[in-house]
Image (cartoon, rainbow, N blue to C red; front, side):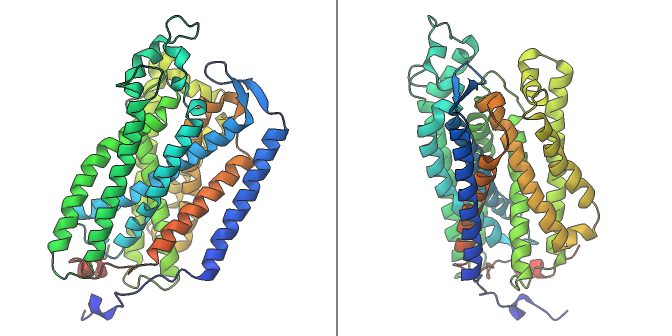
Length: 430
């Protein structure tokens, strides 16, 4: 024994080198070029397509761009807020093993202000093309397009205003969720950095209190945001499991991203206190919640399948019987269940960086496909697909999020040096 955390450099900072920045910007530029090529291909290949999936409106190429913007922002918003969620879980659960990893989890929250701005601005521009329920003729009983089901749900979007006008309640929820997530993130961030200056347990107890408050708010806001931003795209359809489903997808993607950053830093000589046992635990989380996501996916599918009620089964019929989307159902299951289940089952696989880097990268792509399948069929119908535009937008968003996370991670100590459980984290063994 004889070792303690004082043997390590607890003031270590991540050096965000010019070379690494250049790599990220190169990926960003490549993504932008691919995205531009995709836009030009769609625009020049005929600006108009067949009727819209819902409602018979003409399809325009820019609707595919809008759908991609929405998919990526919702997806990476989830990964960002999951970072804060996982940080808060460690304090609420009084976890000691993760004390040396907390700053990595928290750093993902730096994307939240950008995500909020993009979400609100993009809704103002593209909301009418993404969300069928924004079309006011659906609420006019004298219109041939009047829809009784959507009219019945109108108050959820438009209250306290008249249905079919300005979706005040929807916008209020969006603003409140982002404002609260950013406020909680900033509070936890300030307290975490304060912990570097204040020995003792007082700051730890404060963080624990704020973490518990955040978790209560997150439990509600994560589900309602899933209903608002994703489920309401297929306005007639609903699932009582959908909040859990989106959370599970966000959580696995977020865990994979946090694991990738941890392995990346460890391979570059940082995080000396972090050993293969910590890496193993992260691998276990990724493995376990991949199974959890599959459980939710299968439960939702099975209940709808055997009940065979038309207004429920239409969601899966649109996807399974479509030449455009049916292959991606199997891509989704292969990347998000079969791959992590088969590869991460052994103890050794969860302790080696090379396995985790491969699997976590594929899981992040896999859960992007999950959101692709949630959004595109309802917005684009058979005019959708996976091509240059989708690849380009994913690379642009992925590189921007990576830059924001790593840039802010480099500004402070990597380890909260006065955390009361650092010694426990150092001796962590499983």
